[in-house]
Length: 65
Image 1: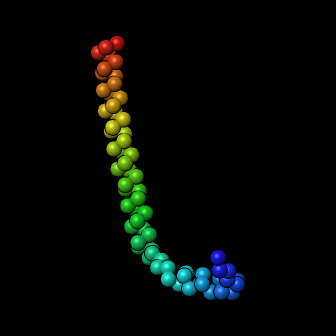
Image 2: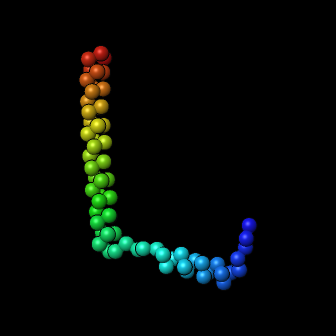
């Protein structure tokens, strides 16, 4: 395993950081909005699935119980 001295390490880190492409404020905003929309849609979907399963089980229990 090759070891580098601290100065070379810092230079390599700075070179790698300069390659990073940071998102714009608009991209961050749009991505955040999409995450909230998808979370809301997922919550609605699972609420409906829960309601359907609960209603079905209550119907079965009422029929057989």
